[in-house]
Length: 420
Image (cartoon, rainbow, N blue to C red; front, side, top):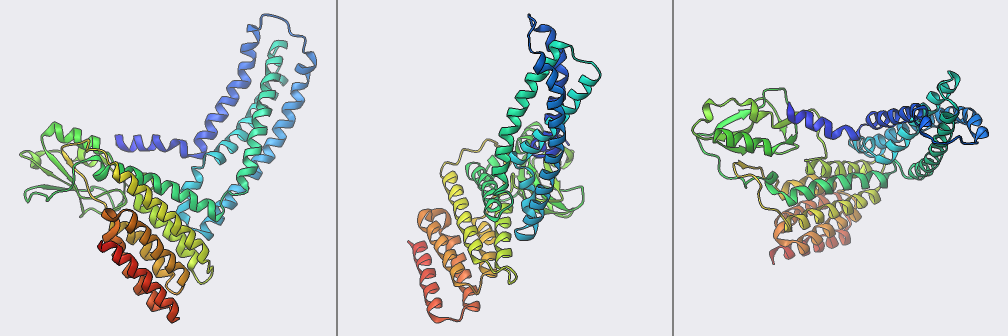
């Protein structure tokens, strides 16, 4: 439960309502505080014109912001719908967490509430002369803020929800997760080892779902307290069900321990997330490519762009793996993410859906060659297997002999580079 609460709190900044609520509260406080700050002014300011015109300015702001909010929401909904139909529904989570769109909508809503509260305060005689002057300067500040936000929002609308924007978002999320896993192999725990025969298996006590987070620190603390060793059998992204063990405990008191503190360190939800699950990002990238390669779309250029993004993600993983940190936890043996699984999540699906397109297979072989030559110790075996697999799929879909010879030569270069 504690881990679930922590995860919920960590995701609050990604929620549109949370940021909108903060901006709204700040706006209301600013409007009300004008009367509190007024008495602190040590002199009488001769700004009767300004203080008298603030009501009209607030009225204009309130009416215009209401229209801007409605327009912005309709644009965002349209972008979400477009992303679902042109790319994949799995990109919506990244769009919802977009800082620029959240800031824009929150600023518009905050300005609207600031104006409404200010108008109500003026109508009710809440402000004295000094308070109206403070409210006037606060209104000018809000106008400057709104102007900058509108300019930024207009720039955002030119790319928001477009294909390149979606691919970039997924690439950044995937690269972030891969970088963390590269720097902290085995979830920052000890490498996996053979599980003792007398180890006690602990399974999920809830319905089937997907592992989204593992708190290895909590597992380490609990294992240290009871003098046992933990062997994780899953990693984030894995489908679990009541009959599938999540972890194993080994120690003299393993059979007598309460399993709940250990199970509480693993969060199981209905949907996968990008945070601790690098394979999910690769799957989403491949889904974008699959949609582009469908007969209804027939857009190999997008598939090539996805392959380039995937190549950069693997490069990030390789660079992070070269600087991997030492294990932080001693009583927990973490799971290993196989390179072959990462390649299967990404290259295999694109090779399958682009079986009849030589340009797609040429880029697949080129990406595999780049990985095999740049980081042979890490990628050579998986690259060789993926290259042969992609070639076999291409031979089933391509009939033009020169194209076949070209792909065979490219695949041969990948395989030969892996043998060196």
